[in-house]
Image (cartoon, rainbow, N blue to C red; front, side, top):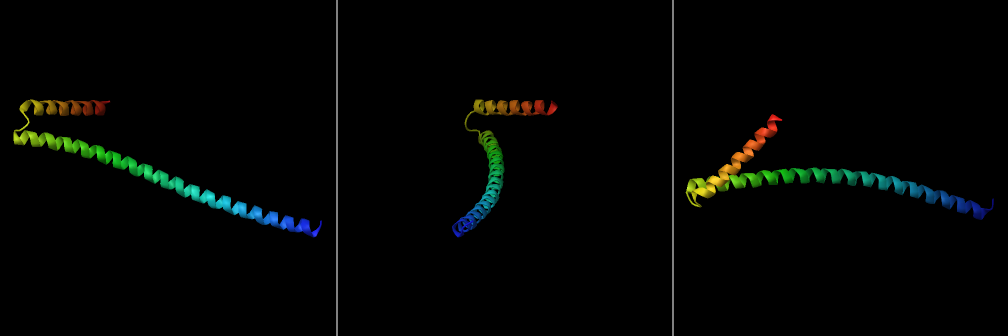
Length: 97
């Protein structure tokens, strides 16, 4: 083996070592990013549930406001109450399953 071959071999070993180090580094970074994605997906789920709850509470407050103020007519309030009763019935049916 000539000196040039030895230098090429040493250079090849160094490059191979660098590649393995880069692969390991990228694997760790990928794992961190996957964990971050999972955390963010969980956060999105929590925020969507919170949004849904807030929308429901907002609708309930609107109905309560209409009932207490006497504005908006009795028919509109009656429809909303009927809607809420149907929602409650659906929830009870789901709980009974």
